[in-house]
Amino acid sequence: MSTATATATANQSSQVPMIQGVSFRPDTDVKYSKCKPNSSGGKSVGVVNAHTGQTLYMGTPLLMTWGIQEFTDEKTGKVSYDMALQFPSEEYQTADSRAFLQAMVAFEKKLKADALVNSKEWFAKPKMTPDAVEALFTPVLKYPTDKATCEKDMSKAPTMKIKVPFWNNKWEGIEVYDADKACLYPSSNPSVSPKDLITKMSHVVTMIQCGGVWFANGKFGVTWRLVQGIVQPRLSMRGRCHLSLTPSETVKLHSEADKQQQQQQQQFCDDDDVPSSAVPVSVTETADSDDGESEEEDDGGLSRMPSIAVPAPSPAPAPVEAQKKKIIKKAV
Image 1 (cartoon, rainbow, N blue to C red):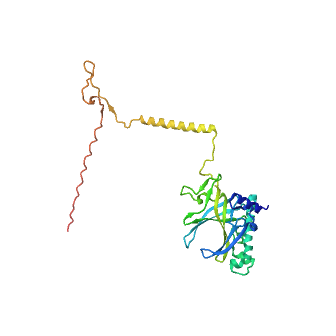
Image 2 (cartoon, one colour):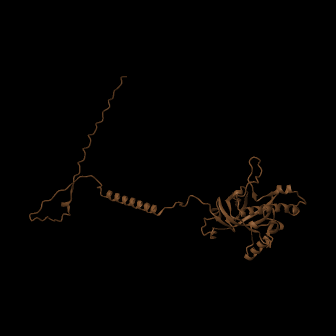
Image 3 (cartoon, rainbow, N blue to C red):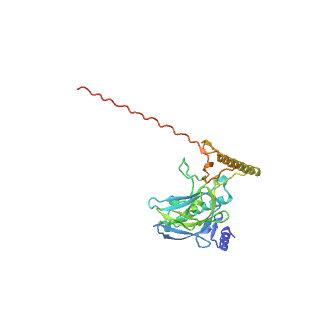
């Protein structure tokens, strides 16, 4: 049994019409639907799973992403989002990332070859050359540009552009999970969005949907959309404690904290014992009665209140007599 057949059988048995990108074979796993006009004034050709006749879904291996990016159309104000999956450089490649990249390169080659065969239906031209097709093709795989030659540097690892569905100011048909497959989005928290979860330099495993071949403004290409993602957030030094204490260090820190707290409490008590003023107080003693008992007249306790020596007010300064002005008349 071939790999493609085994993949299709496994997909059908699990009722998940998804092909794993590492085993994707474009020549046998893909077929096209009829070319038809779309609502934007262009036209499109459906790309479907050749084994099921349904939408082509694909699973990607773990790759780094540059996060979900926002774009606003200057003319219409329409907001859209996409994300780029970064293939690792050669020294960091895995068997899965290498196989997936090779499969996507083969898929783009197939699209251009099929454009030659279907030039009349797709482009309304009876015949086209490979160079003409190459000039019209918009690839999904984006390679960095060589600054010296201004040409694509095919020796570097490319990125793969994926659209993130966002219509009518809503994220549509997207699910995001953590490594334990717990759902992060949709969320009961309205402030959480896929953009918050899939951040720059995080690692993701995705299920993507092929949106078919598009034709617009004399160009053509293929669209992939995000359906599901498992995200491994980028490790950060901030927001969590990366330090650990030995048991003895923990005991010492707690004892130091207790000691400082006791010192602060003692200082607070000492401050309460200090009198609030330094006004001298003199006490007038009353004479004892003949029978040795003090008189307890109902004087409100005034006889035992200490008399406070109040300093006499300073004399007011003598008024200063204003000098009289002398008026000298000038002789006429």
